[in-house]
Amino acid sequence: MYVRHLQVNDFRSWPLADLELEPGVTVLVGSNGQGKTNLVEAVGYVATLGSHRVSNDAPLVRYGAGRAVVRAAVVNHGRELLVELEITPGKANRARINRGAAGKPRDVLGILRTVLFAPEDLAIVRGDPGERRRFMDDLLVARAPRYAGIRSDYERVLKQRSALLKSAGAARRGGGKADLSTLAVWDGHLARFGAELLAGRLSLVSALAPHVTAAYANVAATDEASTPSGRVADLRYRSSLGESLPERYGVPGGPEIPWDEAVPELEAALLAELERVRPQEIERGVSLVGPHRDDLDLLLGELPAKGYASHGESWSFVLALRLASYHLLTEDGAEPVLILDDVFAELDRRRRSRLAELVSGAEQVLVTAAVGEDVPPELSGTRFDVREGEVHRAA
Image 1: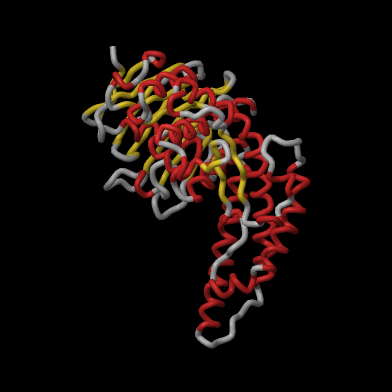
Image 2 (image 1 turned 90 degrees about the vertical axis):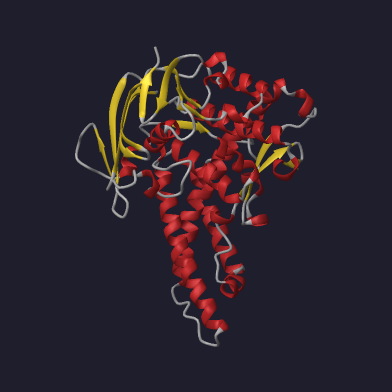
């Protein structure tokens, strides 16, 4: 899989940019603020309908413009599809495939897969649980686009249910009577969509964990001085169900589980836990059970990476997560485009070289760098210079 052509109109800083791309390595070199990251961000947006830098679409539209358009010609196993996305703040975004009728952006999910490495990734290890939930859900949607709808449905129900709990809690504290007549209905919806999302995440972690262990060993292989012997990387899913989560579901890499068949059992477990904590939820006015309260434990040996890993080990874990994602998606039958956005400036010489060695054989690798010398020689390829609002292929 690779992007053959990319065009953006009024996207971020670019009134217009047009790039002909090829398989192999492409390096975009430009000083900070010249717009190189904006270009690979556009590629990532086609794949995920989101940005790795901001949480909403408004900043993606160039200041003063009413909308932004991203077009990408994606080649997969010899078949080319043209994806066009129109981003309009305050209105519904639109999408077209092969210049057909406008449809929902979600229709394009799965046409392009990407795995993006960026300095912001360090938050997956060191940040709050929301960063790790986003990592899981983005990868889950990349593997199976139907989870975009499940996640959206879950977030909609969670918002409605939380609003009900908040108003009920306020009424009780004010001496009034809380209207909880619809709470059972929202419990049912939350448990149903939550069980599907939870089953998807558990399945994902089970499949991903062995890849993370192997990738961490590969990344850290040249850094023995700062990686104590026996510090094996591993993943564990931490559910708000606690001990109510059947034990067999929390063992990554264990026996294969028919996850679709697990959904009814997980739904029942969620409903039971919601009933158990209902008094606390009403008192606090928040939803205390569900995938929105879960976390992914990143372990080095028996210790959590967060709080115990050194800076170098944290970076090795981040790289391992992204490399594992790449291998997992490739196993699924469509090798993703790798995007390395200013990541080499954050790494020491050994990690730069090791990462370059591990990704150099990918079908397409897009790299951005402020200084060309930061890019290891293993990733020499086509180069574009980005400066003063223009992008030119280097001679």
